[in-house]
Length: 173
Image 1 (spheres, one colour):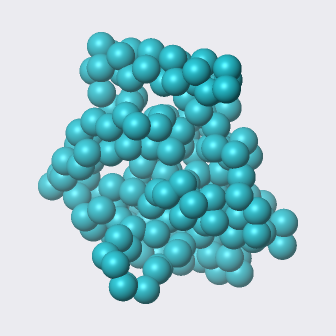
Image 2: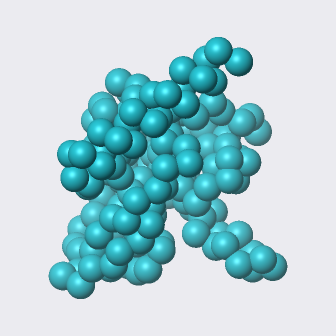
């Protein structure tokens, strides 16, 4: 497996709507494995293909955070939200493409999601809590949306400026 470079906001590829996966190929399965390794290495709990420069509808996630609990890595091809609860949750979200920036985001507390698994089989599952927040955050990436797009324009602008500054500083190193 290979660790991928994570794109940092602002990057135009992070604002593009991704193409559906026509066929779950060996190449895409390897990409999913590389993305999981990249996500764990970062460390994070979710990663979308556009964050590594691939404009395909693929996300990976693993929201198990307790020490000693076995990991539950998931790779989802063409994930789509089928239903959302009226009840909401507020989580302090961050993003591997916007390092060291966090903000409270309100999202549906529960979602039903359909996707293709690594074998190309259609799956459906209900998610709640952190898993629901994470899967919505990652699906947003596939639609060219970042968590800061859920914030007020002023807060979004402030985080974008900090991200631009950090990007410039990293480029100098």
